[in-house]
Image 1 (cartoon, rainbow, N blue to C red):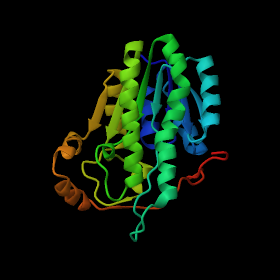
Image 2 (cartoon, one colour; image 1 turned 90 degrees about the horizontal axis):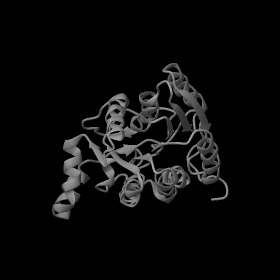
Image 3 (cartoon, one colour; image 1 turned 60 degrees about the vertical axis):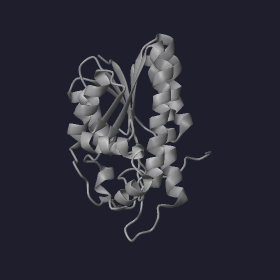
Length: 270
């Protein structure tokens, strides 16, 4: 059983649902998010389930603040599970405008570097203790770039590749790294999606799948399996055929807004 867990993107959606899945007496949950009000609601639900909860309103792109907070938490209650869940998505805007360089950079900084800002500061302690779990929430889009979300796909593909390397490096040293590639599920991010959402599930249903994979120490977990299988096999098919198929999956993404949090922009000094 994991006794000390840190989760990014814990304000709502999958992060909040995962926090409540891991909440139990004897468990300390460290919750990071950008929406103070929503983060407090998640913490309250976890406390009601018997967990000890600690929260921090931090943008995961702020490496210095992340490292300082994680060091304090790890010193007080050595962390044995880190879940890198925070993420944002841009994409083609309603009306057809491309996402642009600034939006692509924000997604790479949050989805890829934000995950590293969680994992890398905790690795020395986990390796010294010879135990620990790391879960990286990527996406099925890590397996195949989609025309309307180049930045998001690139950020998740980079995170998947990093996770594969990290698992191979640290497994002999006692760490367990689980790569999670969800398809569509209910979230604030999903609400901004304008287009088809095949085989979508609730955030709670997604959290159950992710929790089970983490607890059993799975190396990889992707769902729903029909979409996962199709995207995993797509590199074996002729590129012209796959390109034509994904062009038919057109969609748009509404402008990013989050109650209680500023819009995505790099923290000062980066």
